[in-house]
Image 1: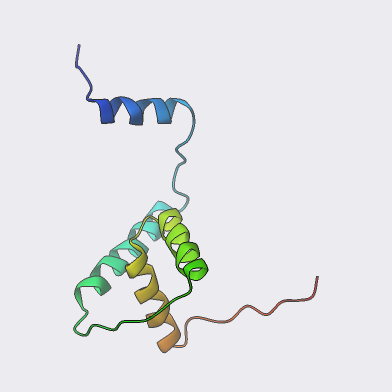
Image 2 (image 1 turned 135 degrees about the vertical axis):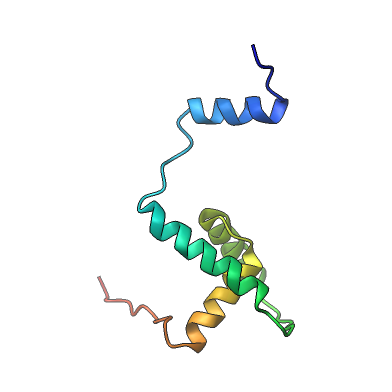
Length: 94
């Protein structure tokens, strides 16, 4: 019988509680995260910005949901905006 480490036991219990979900459209997700990783290594300049605590908390939570570092998420957002791929969603008033 193989002994699991404490961390492995915690992961096993988490899986058994149903806290893990399959990734829908796995090939597309892998491609997306590969692009995130590649863009991380292409950076050549550093920029410092100030964000409100609420905005930073929200971004960090979204990054956790996406499974990427929050700096990578911010960089991705800036890249998409700069290339016209980030579109502001208008409130439809519903």
